[in-house]
Length: 533
Image 1: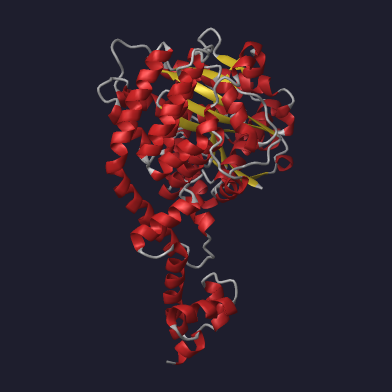
Image 2: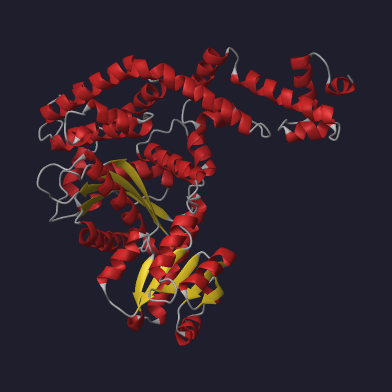
């Protein structure tokens, strides 16, 4: 059961909310009620509800103050649904400032709209729980970053094998149980101002826009918003059986509501290009490739476009497909190999120089390479910004290029900068990767450590990680793991409280026999003999 807390200073309102709908049928337990903001906070700390239904105007501290405090201390949960007697947009603006889930007017409240809001909140709670995004801790933040990197690879079809994809899908707790999916490419247009916006201002608008888009859109449909660069983001859309039937209408409504609120609040305009509906998450790269083909046609007059509503785009699919280079690009960034990267750029530039590649395809290809740079290269955004530091828009100057030759010139600057930067960066990063591999091994010493899983954790190939590790450490990863496990087993054996098979089990060995075999190979004696020394 999902726990819900009601906070309102009017007893009749509390009673009315409790009796308005059948909470148990929705899977909701009303865990407590409070008559003021301070009491509500104490009860939230005690019961840790997933949802709080609260009045805005209350004694001691308001619903807005309560929501802000809980967001800072507890993270994304509990979700806050705010009630008020005043249909005042200022309250909505303040609610949005701490990402309240919804905002309802008491006089308009009915069993139908309350049920609809609660059902959407339940879906959002489950999505947050599934993806591990409910906590504000640093580890949760790192976990979300890994999830975003997963989606970048998925949308651009950069997984080398289905096994690699499935392994990360499970480890990162990515929800893949929905009836259908679609991908959207969203363009961020900051407010028009005199003069150029600084990069700091752009980042502020982008960060706020992304947070609010996630909160506002998820009120209507489950989604994952993935940052790309400071002018673009991708959105993965999830559809249940009930929303899959008329999915375009649901998506259009969700985007329209979010876009209107964002424009009213920040004067930021968003444009959305949506690819085809697919039945499997693994197929999202197809949907995302569709979406990016619409970039040159979406506009303020047509801010939401769907691929299959634009038949004129069907002929572009086979003109230029950057996924043909996905392995080469991924490997070049993974190994920080400037020679391989130069070859990939040369091949792509040669194709883009042919006369039959339209402007929209060239922009899409360059944009994809930029996204790979920002997301796949360590500190990619910082590196890309430094390469275009003389331009007020830094790397986003790409989207100011209006011809294919201008795009090719921009790509040439990116290529030259990356190929000059990678050699001096390579040694430092490789050592960083090895050190983090050693840290991972130490932290997971009690488990069975498999090279493939280890490589997937750092999004590199097993062969590359193995060679790199041996170069820096002088021993292979398997030997390093065995040595550490045996050193730890010596401590456990000398302690005398554990049997040999228990030591083997505690350190993740397949069996006591295999543990004894490894122990003897490393130390020269059997575990039982070592214990008796």
